[in-house]
Every structure is written in C-alpha cells, then in structure tokens.
Image (cartoon, rainbow, N blue to C red; front, side, top):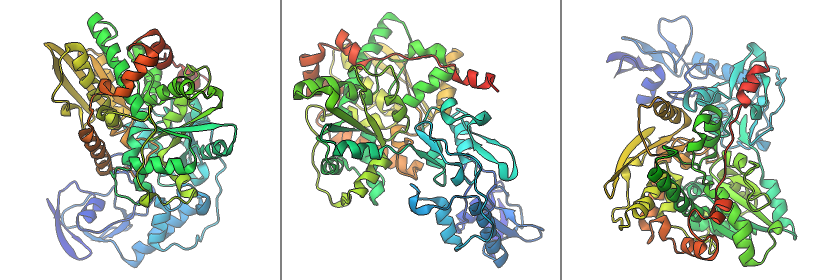
Length: 578
C-alpha cells in the first residue's frame, strides 16, 4: 500500500493502482473516452488528465501509477481547461451530426461534452478524408471516429481476429481494415464487439429497418417474424427497464402492433437444433469419428473457424443455427400448413447479433429454394422500430407467440447464455443415450462467465467430456489446446461474444459483465419455470417430426436443417495483394 492525497484528503491504495482507479475508489469520477479497462489503456484522448504536485505537466490518470506521497488534484481550473481543450480537439475531427446519428442520446462523446460543459468548438473543423465503409453488416464511418483505438484493442486482444488496425499518423490517422481494404475483405467475423465498445457512432450495424417497414406496407407480402432467446432478457433496456427484465410477452404484443402476421419464437428451433445436434453427436461418439464435435449455432464462430482453423471444418456440427432452421421451416412446413406460397412470405428475424445478418446471406443456406431469412434485425433495430411506431412498450400487456412455431422448452431459452447450448444438448443426449429419465436437468458446471470451462458427464457409464468457450480469444486458447492434443474432449460449445448471445454485438449498449449476468439469470429463471425443460419433450417438436420430418437425422431433416461449410483463404489473398 502507498499513502497518497487526492484533492487534499489522505488515502491508502495498492502500489500498482492507476490514478484513475484510485480516484474511483475515492468516489471521484474522472471522465474518460479511450479507456477500456483491461483492454484499451493507452491514454490517447487526454480527457482524464489531473494535476500531480511536483510534475511539470498534467498526467493522464488512466496510465499513471500512484506512488508514495503523491498529491493529486482532479478539479483545478488548469485541469478543467485542459480537459475541455483536449475534447474540443477531438470534436474538431468529429462529424457532429448528433440528431441524425444512431447513437444520439447513447454516446460517450456526447456525454463527456455535456459533462465538461463544451458548448462550442474553438478549432477549425478537419473533415475525415476517408469514405464510409458500408460493404458488410458492420458499417464504419471514419467521420465519427475519435481514434480512441478501443475497437482495435477489442478485435485484437479479446477476439483474436485482427480485422482492424491503426494506420498513418497525425491528422491522417486512420482506423479501419488493414492495408486500406473494405471490412468485408478482411477476416472480420461480423461479431459486432467493436460496435459494443465504440464510444461514438463510428461503428454501427447496417440498418435494415426500412426494408422491413416497406415489407409491412406491401399488400403482396405476408410478413412473419421470429425472435431469438436472448432478446427477451434485453429488449426492455432500450425502454428504460432494468437489465434482465423478462419481456417476452411485451415483445410479442409490440410485434403484433407493428403489423406482423405471425410471431414465431426461435426458441422452438433452438429445441429442434438440440434434437438434431444431439442425434449427430451421439452417432459420432458411437463411431468415434469427427471428435471433438463443435457447435454450429454462432455464425461468427463458424467464420472464425473457417478462416483460422479450416482443418477442423469436418468437426463442426452440420446443424444449421436456430435462426436458419426457423427460416427453412417458415418457407416449407409453415407455408404448406397455412396454404401460403413461400415466395409471398417475407421472414424477419430479430437477433442479438450482427453476424446473423451475414449468416442469412450465406449462399449455401437456402434449402427452401429461396432465401430462408429475408432480413435480420438486431435488438437495437427492432427497438428503434417500436419507438418509431409510438408504441408504449413499458406499459404493454403480455401476449403469446403463434403455434406451432412459438412453443419452447426451458432448454430452448437458455441458448441465449454461454453454456446454454451445451447444457441443453446434455439434457437430451443423456436420455437418448441411456434410455433413462434425467431428473436433475441442470449442468451448472458449464454456466457463467469463465472464459473456458470443462466438464465430464457420466451417461449410463459412458464418460462424455465437454468444453465451453465464449469470446473468440478464449476459443483460440481452447482450439490451440485441442490442436496440440493437450485436451481430449467429445463436444465443444463456442460462442463468439462474451457471455454468449446475451452479450451479442446487436444488444443494447452498454453491455457490462453485471448486465450480462442479469440477462443470463433471467433466461435461467425462465428455464426453471417452464413445465417442459428438455428439448426432445417439446410436444410441437414431436409433432413436427410426426407430420413432416420423419425422425431426427432423416433425409428430409438433413435437407432442411443441415448445411456445409467452406475453407476461406480470403485473408491470405488480402495479404498477398499488398
């Protein structure tokens, strides 16, 4: 411990503490922009400066460590003026178009400007010489970039993707894809974690809401919608409700008010995914082939493996994600039952994920003969549509989803949290392998926010070893262990985003570990309260097989519910062209 003074008061703090953290412990909130604890700590923005007695210049509190006897001043005229000047220099490079920016009202730059009392910019505007990149699901606007480097750090340090970099110096500094490429021409997996940590509107998802509005207004389209497990625990945050508020019923009511003809629940196809995937994994374990098997629900993870670990493509489960299974069923099974031509159906999927936009556009996923999912909206986009329609979301009554594609088990709902796919699969695999009834359905060893988790499950004398990883950096750690033969394992779940889908790139901003935990708890509570907690016991899943698919793993099931993957050499091509 060291003894320091902050604004005249004495404190004891650990020796390696930064001034920023010491002030935080003393209930003094220092403004920051570039700082992202444990990830991006570069001190580039200069809005966190403080005075330290005996030093010639102001110190950047996020990177300066305390020392014995240090005297710190956080609110002097010099400090206040320096913070304002540094912020004005940042604003001089920023496209200040707040009312038309998607982050208006939820922007860290805007918040800091208001907090520091910056009402005008004293410096000449310096517009960005670089053009907007809207080539893919993630849109980069260099005019709104403040060069904080948080996106670069997250992409490199947390996700191990390296699709963003810093180029040039001074006023020509550029943050974007390496070698001047478009983001779509890099190994970007579209996970959207750069969006989640961007303090401004420099990184956003592609806005597809106008396409949905046009479809809803068209007399020639029968517009249906399906919603992911995770959004029922996060959508409320966009309307001021506490994180983790369960709003499934309100979501259904709002979507009906918007004009969707049918409201389906992707939890249903999460159950379907488990039945198909458990069947596939059991077969592979029995034949001792393609082990370990990797889950295939996360499109960012799929693209990451295709890019960086293509030798493991045969180990991926061939099961489509719940989104794409729903897409296939909507335009075949539902279309036939409802007597509606599949070409007339316009299917909108609401997801907590930006990579789902990419997944829906994959050319190999069109088993209905046409595009299975027409538009993917993030949680944020759907929230904007509800607001645009003037719907009072908070005070809506609950309503239910439409049958048959709206019923789900507790196993389906926990898909939204890391470890949920694995736990759901184990519930069904246990009974399918052993023929016995599983009484304790909770496998808590694969839950919660540790980066990599391992467990061994005894299924009627057979030891099944499983692993779970979330965030691609942790997935890389696990993949390298598997590749080196350091772990022997049967089944592995990977989610690209920390916490799984509850922390997806399309979720409300901010998303912290505390918020992730609250969202996860809401899903687990829903699971506990469901009468049916195993995917294979969902009566409408049973009916689907009886009426339409035959049995799990049947030829028809394979045609509609399974897919294939491709080895990607794009990154090597990009580098070779430099």
